[in-house]
Image (cartoon, rainbow, N blue to C red):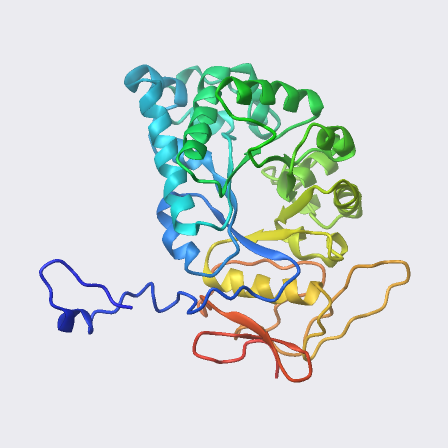
Length: 388
């Protein structure tokens, strides 16, 4: 597929290929994984390239980055331009992503900026000074305490649903207990969102809501999403921005993994989907077929690597690797293969993976099984990137 630019001929367009098409999957075939692989997005402008990776959807669209790009706090923007203008900004940002990924799901999180970020914006002079903003006035606690801007966010979701974007999902951050959700559902209903029809869920970021997952699920959430950075720092009492204790920050600490495992098991029994992001995303102790999706960065190599791990975690034996047996455990612990993945040597597949942008970007790769039933990932040029 080529781009026909204004004023150009079809012949000229033939020699002007769209660079995006070079990495777009040629068929809508999903990777053969029991676990979906989704991407994180911070800015709507990245949606087109992220969608071209072939990811199963957006696991996290951060609404705060849409707001921060306005250069004003929500309150100040509403004062200067009015509620409707603010709602339109939110709608436009989420719609851009939802359109690119449609019908794949786009999970948008309501505002979750700490006060120190808002303080840098126009109107931020009145923001409180907190010793540790990550433990302070943010997430759903701020939204419920200051419902004006939050109602605008919910109205943006309502408008998107009315526009037919049924792939948009609403996610609530830093929820502690059922009371937080009950208060939120009342506000959802106030703006015309039917909690029984819309697809919505919560983040699991505190030990409190991990331990109270049954009560939370009973209210009607359809999914939970583990934010492992916050869950780790709140579980271990480690400020990940504090240089004196940052070495104690460990997403794979046994206490964190136990919280994740028990929550996944409960959600599985209750029919609630589970998703995870962070280094713990690809520890198979939190999978065993029960984890619905993993979420990683939106560059192509991240998606391909994640697809590889998701296949391995679903029980397919990789070339060069092995599946150690663990009594009484239905997960799959995949040892590090003898071969690198996607030209990246020594990618750690044991318990964790740190997926970042790499020079050898593998956009649009797909999975297949060879004649022995072994999973192989291939780039669009056909080169095998998992296997000998």
